[in-house]
Amino acid sequence: MRNMGMLVPIAFVLIIPRMVSAEMWTAHTTLEKEKSTSARCGEVAISYTLNLTDKTFTATSEFGKMFSIQVPADGLIKQTYKRPGSTGWWLFEMTGNVRSRELEIFVDNWHCYYKLTPD
Image (cartoon, rainbow, N blue to C red; front, side):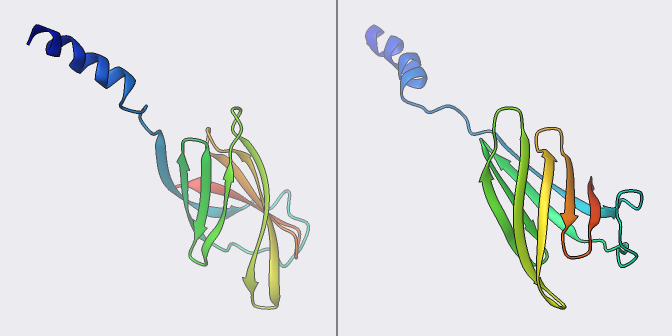
């Protein structure tokens, strides 16, 4: 019976996998007027749900899942994605640091820059 008392702590260390690291937050777009080059850029507030689970980052907006990618140790990403817009497909690029939550979206169609501001 004494041996069982020693086996239980060892089982927790060897058998139970490490805990999954997960963070989820919401953010909305804020126009960066000084960086945007088109007069067509507007204050379009699109809400995003952002999820970082272990090394996988997923971005979802009101238009559905945008993308899911592996994040390097430094947290820096540069991911192109597209979604349907009023005039066909729109091309976007999300860049920045996922771990610090400092992210920016570039809208290629109109050369607009939006900061993702955490809610």
